[in-house]
Length: 565
Image 1 (tube, rainbow, N blue to C red):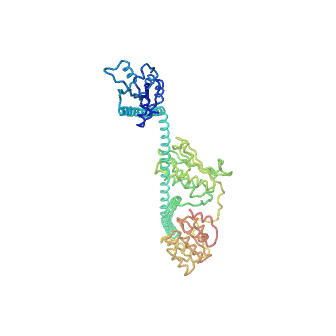
Image 2 (cartoon, helix red, strand yellow):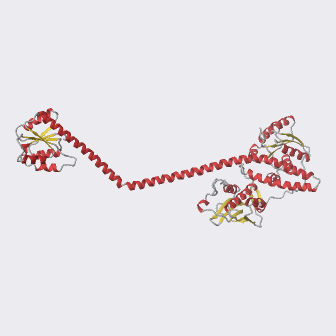
Image 3 (cartoon, helix red, strand yellow):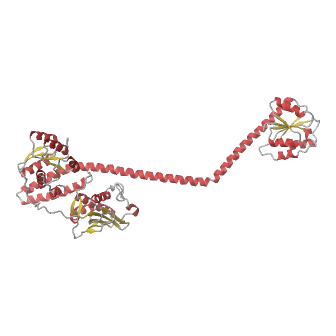
């Protein structure tokens, strides 16, 4: 429709001739019978119109003029006007026609066919350019409409995108913070593992040294003729006992073991920690002790409970950098809180006047690796250990805190009866072995520890054979079987449990004592070949009682308790 050619020629055969001429050039032409038909054809669409000048004479061309006036801005319809050749200027009516048509090319008759076809081709080209302009205008209009729509929703989209970016950024920051916390916890865990391994190795060697020092001091005290030398030896022995205590506290960080639950007087435990607490807390903090006069006995692990109280005291000290008051209380018969089984409980409370803990953090303080202290100032394990020790003992740990006022941590432990006296005189000089002629094999890689045990056993009349490692000890057993074996745990090559297993295969009934300052007793318990475990550092009496108990098959709880201190 847009490329067709409209013909408006009312005289003779002009329309037919022009239509045939244009058809030869491949153009489609439509003849219009009157001005109204031409106006209708223009409205439907056309590429150009070939009209004759005389067709408009006396005709009503108002519809054509109306269509021309209503053209879109991009449209300037091309007309080809076939006019009669005249001499001079055109009549006024003819000029008015040209003005009404607007974009018009005038061809005077007679017209050559090539001239007409060339004019038609040119007019169609102009019309196609107008169509292209229309398409571009439509694209521009569509783009403008889209831009208008985008501008109308720009603020909304910016707000939505900003909120989305804010959510993404918050999530990213949360993940980064969580990753940093996890990384810090991992680093702290790895550091604590390394510290534990290092502490265990150091404790093994240190306990060997303490065994030699404390044992030989005891020998000096027993054999010295001069009372002053004996007194000096006792002083040094007291110091070595305190060193052994510190070593056991270090070992708590380097091994995981089942708690050895025994009756404990918590008043005596707190009193016995006075020196340790004063050295740890420092002079800027006032320490108060409020104990229940009823002497509360509870069921717990002595070393682990002592470590728990020490951890709480250190936390209290850190919460009072400018000084304050640390109060340790005991309660013999407190009412159990919710979460504990009905029964009687003793309580240790550690109270400070420090900065306190915010409510949102209070529910997390017992979580492993959670700490409110700066990086590098705390392991995040202290309170979780307290909680674990209380739970394993059948009790509970609770915390109460108020910012700016202070914190109170309570350890609830099941009450128990005090141990029955066994009638032993612990200050007696010597323990009499069942058979002083027993032959004992001592295997220990530390020369000093081995020599101390040999000298001590000789003091009680035992015959001794010694070896510095498991292979040499087993070789001695193959040559002559001893009556009893004392073997160290941590040795190069085979450890003490492995040596004990092979020794048991050779002598099923031979008593075996495992001397150790490092190993977890679970390994010995699983082996089921150890009659007694003797904890380093140990004294002469503890050594003799361990041998007597192993040889006689007698269970001696008090000797075991002294050996595990």
